Amino acid sequence: MRRQRVCLVLCLLVVGVLTACVRQVPDTHPDQVLTKRKALFKQMNRALEPIGLVANEREPYKKEEFAGYVDELQKLSNKPWAYFPQDGNYPPTRSKPAVWSEPAEFDAAQKQYQRVVAQLAQEAQAGDLEKIKPAVVEVTNSCKSCHKKFRFD
Ligand code: HEC
Image 1 (cartoon, rainbow, N blue to C red):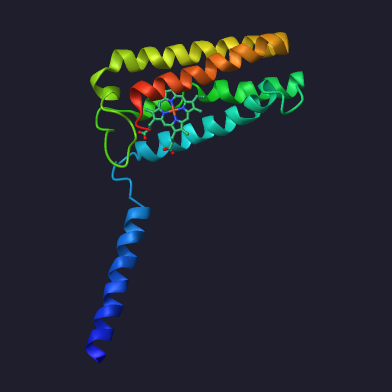
Image 2: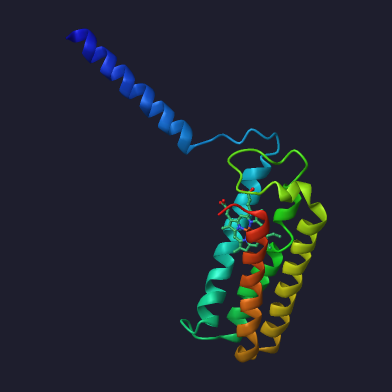
């Protein structure tokens, strides 16, 4: 009886440790490139949020404030790419192998993204909401098209 109980307690302990491991996979890279690029993509996601709300008319358009949001997004637009080095493909990455096997295409997708963000920044400076809206769509399409080719869902 007693022995069984000890076993049960041990089992529960093991399961607890294992689930903790699954939840927190340590970043094994010396420069923690995966952790860094994920954090930057999350920031991009957050930066895009208020822009999307205005473009969808769920928040009022205020020129200066909006230009500030776009500025933040533009500042981030060249950041994540430095964190995809040759030895940067390791779990739990969501990047597809194409990031490393098709570097020219990955580079082109980054450039395309930066181009549409720059276009949005121009429209934000000009201040015409009706022109801003399609520019925002271009940006979100660019996120999506890169993910389709280079990221697992
Ligand atoms: C040039 C390609 C490219 C563009 C453009 C791009 N992404 Fe990504 N994104 C990736 C790749 C690759 C990953 C997978 C990173 C990994 O796990 O190694 C990723 C991951 C992410 C993640 C998941 C981060 C995590 O914690 O796992 C989010 C969120 C994200 N991107 C948001 C965006 C948003 C929002 C945009 C546009 C404003 C965008 N991305 C534009 C390639 C891109």
